[in-house]
Amino acid sequence: MAARIRVGVMMGGASSEREISLASGKMVAEHLPRDRYEVVMLDTLALMAHNRKISPALRERAQRLLEKGGQVEALPARNDELPQSFQEQIRSAAAAAAPATEAITVAGGAARIDVAFLALHGPYGEDGTIQGMLDLLGVPYVGSGTLASALAMDKAMAKKVFAAEGIPVPAGTVVHRADFRLAPDAVAARAATAALPAVVKPARQGSSIGMSMVKEASGMRAALLEAFEYDSVALVEERLGGTEVTVGVIGNRELQALPLVEIVSKREFFDYRAKYDPGLSEEVCPARVSEEAARAAQDVALRAHRALGCRNLSRVDIMITPRGPVVLEVNTMPGMTVNSLLPKAAQAAGIPFGALLDRLVQLALEPED
Image (cartoon, rainbow, N blue to C red; front, side, top):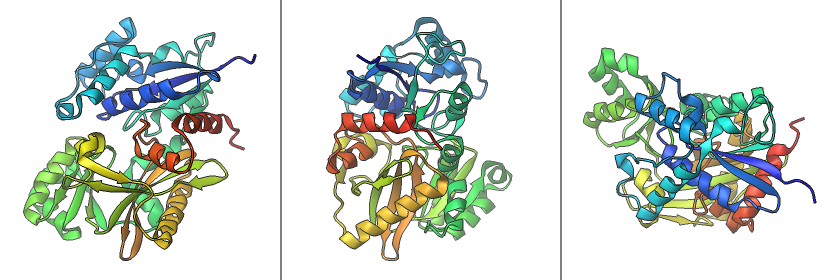
């Protein structure tokens, strides 16, 4: 019998999406086929014990992780209203994860992983940083490479690439925190002129963290302040009307666009709570749009995936408007719980969750030539 492939599910980390990453990682670890893979859960926060860019509290947690392995997770207040079962899943994942330092050693040996399954979201995981480290160590991984990951994470830079490729994007502007500090009222007024009603969000965040809807110019300053809590760059975009959908893409050279998932939030928009509380949103797959609109959305999703140079998988968020599909953003490492959007689309395409995970690991192991 051939030796099983040792998979390190990298999860947790230091971003504001840490808790969601822990939930994704635990679900991936539980559903990877055990007859083919030896699975270990790894918290990448352990790599950052001396990183001065993260908070002292996170550095302390990283140090404890290095010393003791998994630990009890104190969840941020934004998780208080999420279902208790989801909160418990996050806590149990944190308690079970080993420090990532154990399995990505330079020396090698039995503990070293054969491939990494990245279940990381946000900065220090989805932005090319961990990808660059794994490239340096020669460890293959699920997901896009350093450049594509960095571009997709930075929504302002991704929009420039899309515009150059003729891919429709929302109108809007970029606001820098340094400029806002010098003249907050004037900068807010210019932003309101660029797009109103508007969506305001940090340029390099996910899970709708730091996002606000602005209906009137008087609300722009507060929305920018909220975005700057999470990033030094904010994106201000027109709020589009239409049907919000997401399109999963899987593959390397040969790409498959999955069935559309339509997103209907019971809140003002598809915010953090609506994303992770099943009672606050409806996700319809296949989406209730015409075949022509679905094909157009899939086509633009494939174009966006290729434009950034993505690999293995992506999830492209799109608004189907009267003028056609408009790309909102590309997620290179989308949520990976059974009920997440990409796995739900894969299920509709006849790909069960375990088979999807298996396929992604095999795609990661394919040569890039």
